[in-house]
Image 1 (cartoon, rainbow, N blue to C red):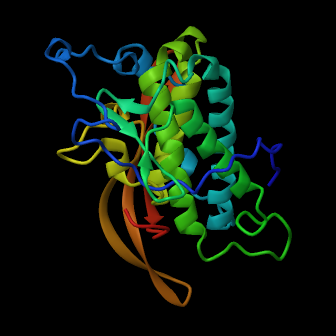
Image 2 (cartoon, helix red, strand yellow):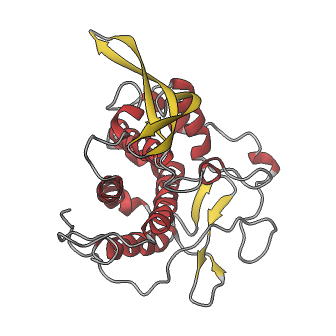
Length: 292
């Protein structure tokens, strides 16, 4: 795995789970005023932007584990690519993300993420500082031979699945902030097909290998909603995210058994501007890389 150049080091603790404000105080976001109850639909949910993508059909077909490839290597390589691409996108629009324009790490009309500092306290951070902490932390992990081994004979640590789920959650927050606060900048650059495809690929891969907790995408009932949750639902309706799993069966593999899902891949082939559906039935192993 080829590594990127190091980012500037930051003295920051390892990130932890989100904290949602549920009361008005000095460290929380006040509820919207009555005049803002009719919130305009975000641009990323509007046509034609929501349909803009480089990939036509279902992302399930491009996240499936290739034959003869170790699953941990496959996950590690894709995490590296997601980080690199997201880091480049944020670098392009970072001049729009300042402490003045983004004083908190927002991801919805009434949602902002907080950081757990070295004293284990939740603190509000400006979005650019929060994102810099996240990207620096992930870059340091990628450069750590003990976490992402690149030399022959070196094994991935037993904690790798838990670490990757943590990385996934934090990268998701960066995606969520860009969609919520900076999607107009993406449109201005005419990069919405590229960014949408990157995020859809990220979501599909996370669900396929159980790296993504759905409540991090949709939000928790009774708590402020995550803006990208509606995008997730819209792409599901369009059939872009994952296959429809019909049932679970058990198959003999080698000397043991493995649980399998019988899935219908809803994909398509575009010819002359006309989309022809392709329906494939396949057995997909339930990998159990993490908890759904």
